[in-house]
Image (cartoon, rainbow, N blue to C red):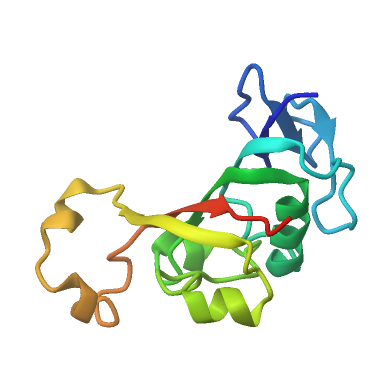
Length: 162
């Protein structure tokens, strides 16, 4: 079995990875509805999981993350990209069910949702318009400047106790 998972692969099929999507009109290795649990992955299988623009579409992102953590090996890397809650792409997409900000995966939230095996190791904003990264005081002005942030990149390490 492949040890790299491209969850919700869509148009981004990656050779050598297990590419999973629910749609019929995209190339994939496995069709899975991410709103139906449990997932068909064995425990401790993956070293790397990529989820690009997926969590905002599912009914239960916390349960999805728990399922993925179970299927990951210890020290696996999970990479998540989501639209920022106040980005134009997020606000205008009627299929989005969840919103995310830079604070969505702070330590308190991780504990609250019983995802302690996830350790956030990197977080950064993705600016589709490069000029946005030069706007001063973004941290304070973001409430007034809707659309300042486009997407957020989160990188986690899986730390299993046993």
